[in-house]
Length: 97
Image (tube, rainbow, N blue to C red; front, side, top):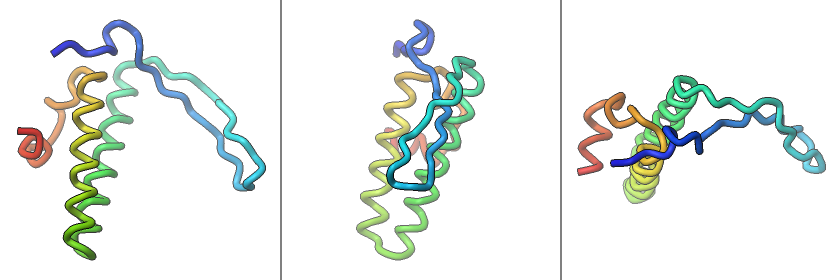
């Protein structure tokens, strides 16, 4: 599977978001470091999966929908970021098969 990060298409942007509704997000930094992007992707997936688990304890159907979204996030990020799938726990991989 080809990923896009090896061609330099993936970067992260650190934003400052003011607490007021009138304030617009302000870009602070652009990050192109592959290891930092991988860490951020792992964190995003872990957060999405934790949300799915939490919601499934409240409402089974809602948790299932959220797990589908978490799986979709993993699939999308895996296309962009090398090493994401290998770095994940088996529970994530079981949903991808």
